[in-house]
Length: 75
Picture 1 (spheres, helix red, strand yellow):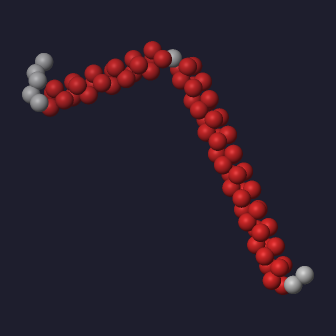
Picture 2 (picture 1 turned 120 degrees about the vertical axis):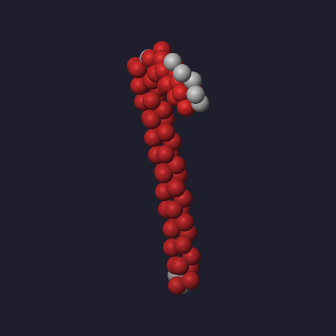
Picture 3 (picture 1 turned 45 degrees about the horizontal axis):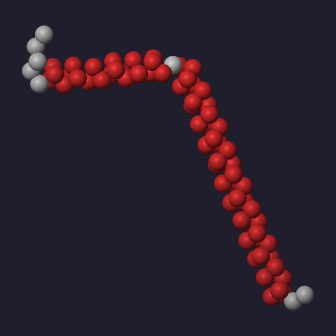
């Protein structure tokens, strides 16, 4: 086998290994994304939808109160 054909085979093997690594990395990313999504969904349901919305409502009321105070609203 000549040096040129050996270099071509080595390049082909390197390209194949790179492609396999990329596919493995993509599969790992997808698995992590799915696991994170499932974990967050579980935590959201454990915390409670109503509790979350209650905190959002309180935060919104606080922002409105601060806005009104800064624009001259008096008690």
